[in-house]
Image 1: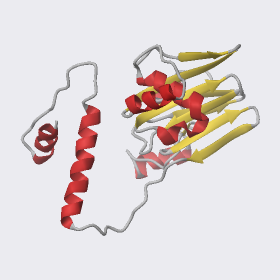
Image 2: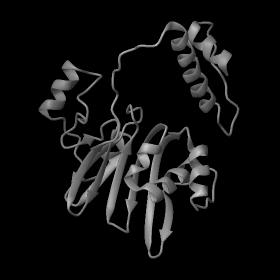
Image 3: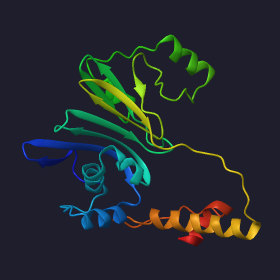
Image 4: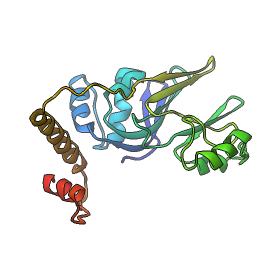
Length: 220
């Protein structure tokens, strides 16, 4: 949470953040950043993300565990950064119109802007009929509207734009025995459930009686 856009003043310059999602490890990051001298005004993960950028710049994404789509305008360098989570759970669309960069986590936000026409191009039409509801990574169906790819971030300055992949899902040969595998999976599930229980409101489990919901409820 936290009020958005969240702003930070550095002298006469402003760094602003707009963010959709959740940073699961924000408490650990907050502690690490406080040890580095950062001071916080709220208890929100939004402010932690903003200070993570102030500390590590674009490398802040390397420190994040969560689902997120965000945009940061850094007036000090005349730079816009767009970042998306590792697996692309949160969408992030953008369109460049002249010197303007429009972005949002929903297509309707861009389509409501007067500079953007809701025009489906030939490639988009073919994806609707051949691939829908999936689509080619980075393509957003509508003409001249694009998507920040999962595990990537982009930067925009007066000199142009750059795209950087910060994470990639890799397949590795499984060499552990059955007991080690069970303990590894159990540890991952316990850690995942524990992080999801962090909330400022009561947490409810939807228990159907199946193995998946029963297992998660039991771990909670």
